[in-house]
Amino acid sequence: MRTVFNPTFILALMLPFISFSQNDLRLLNGKTVPYFKYSVDYDAEMFYYQTEKSNGKRVTRSVLLEDVYAFTDSLQCEVILYKPVSPDQMSVVQMGNYVTGASLARADYNPYWLMAGGFVLSGAGMYVFDNPMIGLVVPIVYSTSVSFIKPSRDQFILAHPEYADDEDVLYGYRQMGKNKSMKYGIIGSAGGVITGFIISSFLSSGN
Image (cartoon, rainbow, N blue to C red; front, side):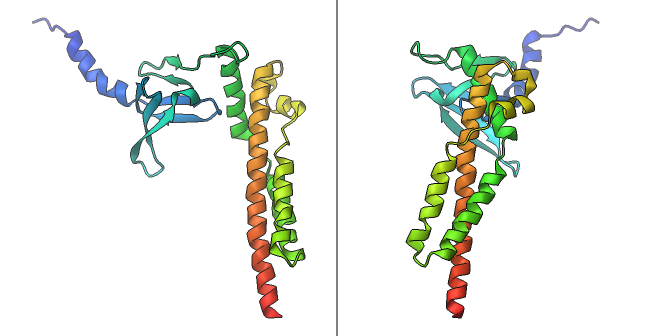
């Protein structure tokens, strides 16, 4: 007796695995989001996706299409949504390289020294100045100053020599590095303000 395989039946067996296989959503800010199911609403210009939280629970989230560079579909093929709308914007290839650079910076550029500096200076400002409003000037000035700090070209090449000649990857890396410098500066300054205020209040109450 010969067994005949029905292609439709085989596809039906495969469909759940295709639908729930993990894919990647690449955003223009360099963030890569793993997801399991997706739908694209071109009228609302939204990308809906199902992702998994740290506790294993799956939730549905959304992101604007204008913030998406590309996503992988159920066949593991990359679908690029980014389209330049003016000549002065990056091409699809350039933007892809920029996103790669931003993603690299997200992964390995961590200016903890800026966080430490913000913590020490802001804490000292809250302790030294009797008026807390004057003390707040220190973290504001510090956070504003560090927001201009970017990783250098040499620093980038040392970490990623394979991209030494790619200006778009470098640009993405440095821009994301700049954002992280500001973020770390703000976090350190906020921690310093809180700590400095607590210490100052404790010492004042003891006098």
